[in-house]
Image (cartoon, rainbow, N blue to C red; front, side):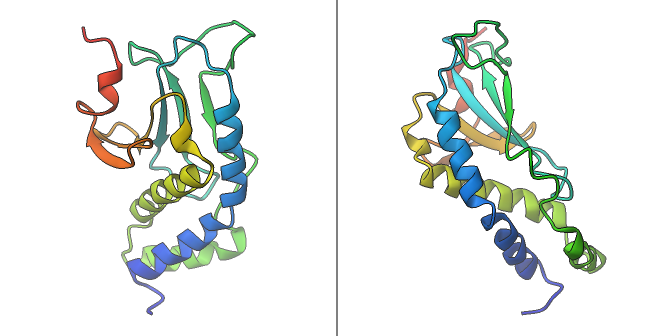
Length: 171
């Protein structure tokens, strides 16, 4: 296995992410235990193209029927309109291994693309192990501003018009 190919980078990144799996699974279980405001109709996890240099570039947004973040001040329900994942992790790729990532980039490997795919696959696996399919709300994961999302209940990719957008009021 060559040090500078896309497959070896993907395997390395999955190894880095898998070390964080127990913490993410615990956080997912905690999120699933929250009491969400009745206006929340969907949990939308978005992965941002920021790479893994500083933390996990993903957030869960609590979405209402108008496809907007849900804001409220009722203390009987979970208050934030979005949730960052493992925010205490400030560097996913350890500083002492940053040179490895640089070597892949120098070899022409699109590290950010590989990281985004790996993040989505890793989150889906953690979601399943944490019992996420039992969520009382529909939940999706997608790249930020993409037209396709992965349905975390039905475990399949769908165009938003046939998937998550069906949960919103039609204008």
